[in-house]
Amino acid sequence: MASGKGTVAKYIENKYFAKSHKFSAPLRDVLSRIYVSNNRKNMQELSFALRQLFGQDLLAKTISQDVENDKNLVVVVDGIRRFADIKYLKHLPGFKLVYITADIKTRYERMTKRGENDDEENKTFEQFQLDNQAEPESEIPRVGETADATINNNGSQEELYEQIDKIINN
Image (tube, helix red, strand yellow):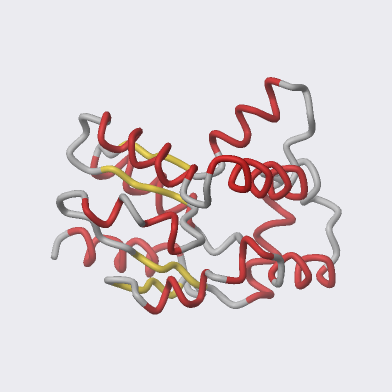
């Protein structure tokens, strides 16, 4: 959470004319459609329920199909958290898994400033730490160990952009 995935996606969209697909988008769509708050807890519960009903790889199938239908030369997938999430993506031509990391205090400060979800602005550091131990976050470090590249996003925005350019141009 708040490691910089969205910032990386926007940079790649702007510089490399890419299209971005977020794993949270289908969940946000459903929550908005049924007029339920788009907060982390609701997205986690909806994700869990959908995966229980339709399989752990439901969102992976959805995003993979979105990527396959995308005509852009460069496509970014934001929000991979589980091995099931890359089950179909890893077979697509040119797929690169990039792990973006930052220390927990930096991520907490970013999250409370951005207000992406309804419940983030007033979240305490202790609540954020608990969120980091929740089921959706638990597999991320192991998935990150299998990444083709790792971005450390504890530095400046310029340093972040340099790391992104190096990965894309290799």
